[in-house]
Image (cartoon, rainbow, N blue to C red; front, side, top):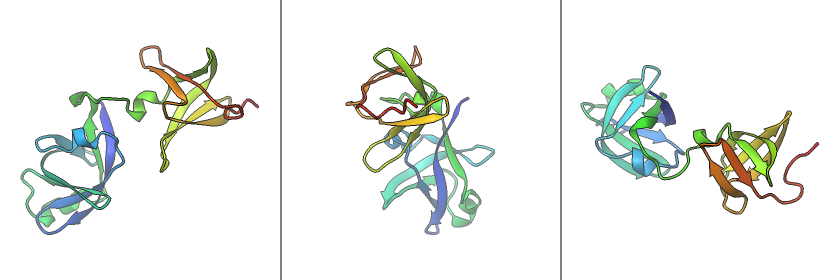
Length: 164
């Protein structure tokens, strides 16, 4: 099983066992569905979702068999996971992109080491011999992602890649 981190339970809400989850997971609409399972905390307690709604910046969830705030308090501050193999997402996960070799015009420029979040769009952190270059993860710069070949092809502007 491959657990995938999707967020944190930051607090409870009300007295009926609802929790507030803060998550920037990009496929929330696939994960937060009634009947799906979330795995919570270091022991990955398996909890079935019985309700879901959005409130401000939070994903509000209740779980099967938990109907009281006292039963859910133990999960406050815990990390929330899913099992990756239980889902088929329409797109790439950040975890799929990290580790890919980055190329510009068939010249390897480094390896994707991270995907940074920004208000506008994600940004690829490409490392080459200790130097980092940052490329927006948008169609104008990302030409192709090939998970089989572990390769990402980029189109960059002059000065975007640190070549020192």
